[in-house]
Image (cartoon, rainbow, N blue to C red; front, side, top):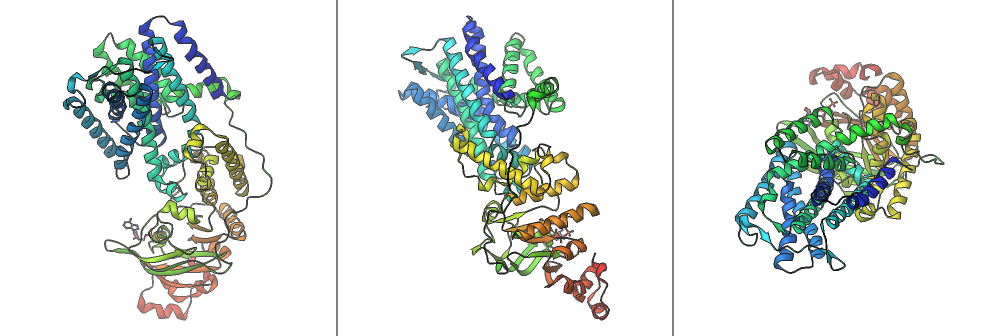
Length: 605
Ligand SMILES: Nc1ncnc2c1ncn2[C@@H]1O[C@H](COP(=O)(O)OP(=O)(O)OP(=O)(O)O)[C@@H](O)[C@H]1O
């Protein structure tokens, strides 16, 4: 049995037994408060710890839940359980609202926007007599009852613990699958996430909504338990405190639980010395950020791993039969035109890295894109993969115009890519990086993943098998559980290639795959590209290593100053005077001379 399962059973047993053993309402209230903080922080952790979106305005979402439950029960006469559901829905809608700025701004700017949201909500509920009751707040909130009986403090402790355990189980399942990997990928490298078919916008919105729903439910429970709510509950301090729980607990699934328990106990302890509270929280925040980047839960996990290494072994890899095979049909008959670009143009101010470029890529061929530094090769690749939108021109791929289609959508259509400057999901394992590449082919939906339905478990099992096959294909299976960022450079490059292959591309774009590799690694890469080509995958690679270009490519396109200056068979390109002139920096007048005495082939190397 895995450690987490054991820990969960122990926590569930404690959750049942502890309120039984406690007769004192004050202590039961502490349990209620810890459970409520856990609920709010568990969703916030998905947003902050997993997706990397900082929010300092979650008190506003707490308020959305609390006031919805308050207004619906005290003024509209709703059933309290239904009001609780409505609170989750309304908070979720507010989550969508505050997610919108995250699609445009990041980091500190996003934090400022969320602070603004929190303050606006606080002001509204303080100032508006109707319907929020101004500073007096709302009385007469109806709490839920079970079997016609009102809950006493022990009942509330049990109720909130039941919510907390259910939330924990669901989030654990969700974060262990494709959604968890998508959140982490967005945090690690948004452009790379898009390039493997993850819709960054939707992923961010989902993270905001999850955090809003759990925060809203926490707010509603507080309002119903107190049977009263006013703006004192909705202060900026609450937003800070929730963030502190997440940062102090750490980003693991257990983090918010550890953080909520530790900080609720500390809060209760420090209640006698209110002056000390803020000072202590500030110090704790600094301590957590500097000394425990993985939070208290991370530190405890490290300790557990050292004390009981056998309990912390990674899930064994599935045993698979057969070699990895591409799933996608070629998309065009071998030798037929797979991608056709016409008149592509892109300018950055006065710099024109893509100047009226047209090109055709043939199915099943390996194409090379060469040219001197700054010729516009990467920009062209970015345009073809949807990372950069051209100012004008058209691209047709598999019968569809893709010139202004988003990168994630282009990936789903069958174009995969790697990056010149590596963009791995550095803190994820090698296996998870490849699984992230499989994202566009995992069909299971949000609810099936959240509830851990058999369809989700089956698909995850199949995805792991596919990832193992792919790691075998690129010769990295022995590294499956290593952190991607800890691999030697050559293996990181190969992992990026494996991640791109996982998206099942019909066309694979490789941006300088041999950059930084030693001769042995370059030789191994040459071999790998040949094997990829032999599987019928069309390749377009940018490369400065001419030996590699000559060894693998069927067709070479040459760019200089953003324009296509030549294309043809590799050997012909090596002899082409215009190409030689571009590489040697020969100006127009000298070009004729260069044509008379072609440079030797190695001049392009
Ligand atoms: N986002 C941008 N903003 C401004 N200029 C840019 C941008 N992207 C590329 N450029 C400019 O466009 C030109 C072509 O860049 P690009 O990276 O496409 O060339 P490259 O052929 O891939 O070069 P290298 O071989 O050095 O990687 C360069 O002068 C570069 O500075």
